[in-house]
Amino acid sequence: MTHPVIPEGNPQGKGLVPILDSLNALQPWSVDKKSGEAILRDFCLSTLVLSARFDFRVVPGKTYFLYRQDDGWRLSLISPQEWGERLAGRWVAQCDLRTDMTWDVNLAPEVAHDAELVNALEAHLRGFVERIDGADSLEAALPVYEQQLPYQQRMMATALSSSLQTSLLLSGLSGQSGQAWLGNGELKTLLLRAE
View 1: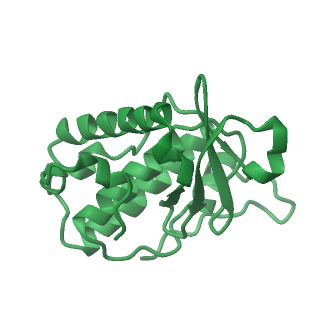
View 2 (view 1 turned 180 degrees about the vertical axis):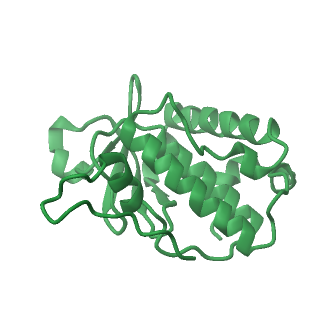
């Protein structure tokens, strides 16, 4: 898939609009054909990461760390080992931004034994399922423009939507409801199942 090239302004850098620069940097580099379940899983896990607080530009190929604090999720550049005693909250997952602008999320081994973290993840999953159930098609549920999100998360949500729409088209699943892929009764495994 090719995307239009956004001009870089004049040689001195004048005239470049920061929002267009951000959108250009977040264009999916490569998008593949995926199963409906894989698309749904990528959507669910990516919205978990995008619901976290962070004020920096994320880039593909870099590892980030998701923490749970009293007031919600936080994405950090700093690993639990680097935090040491000043840990930024309970470590939840290692997160890697893929080149298709979806997130690979590897839960920390301790998560399964932490009832509070499991409850928080289940709450995210319930909200995700409600979003899917309330939409006629999976495309209608995508976060194309989420005004309430902070700037970086809003840009990432737009990139995620572009990626997932392309995956749906490539897979021949465009226009279908995501409810069909949720019907197996094991919603918790959506967070844990591999492709």
